Image (cartoon, rainbow, N blue to C red):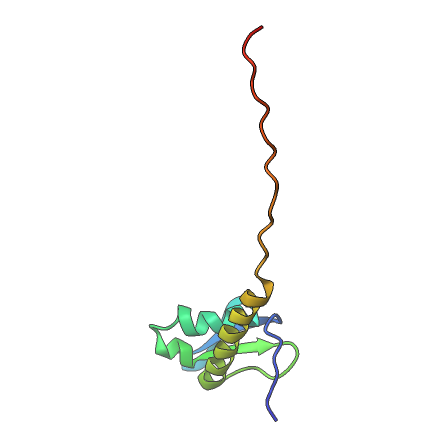
Length: 109
């Protein structure tokens, strides 16, 4: 059964890194943001840091955390598709406003 996600849900974006000094795992909270932004941050913003991408965890209040890069990539594709659809659906129609004709200026009497 496929999982469904609310892409506007507010989540915590965390990256888990091994703390070298104490050899324990430590979570570093990066930000609180909508799920669509968190997914985009991991894929686009951290594209040059594969370790950071692999250590990303998205903590959701409505369910289990998203822990794998594969799942994040799948959600990223959903975000890209829904963004394109939203642009097509929500594109505002141009408003045609009538431009009033300017009154002719009359010279001094």
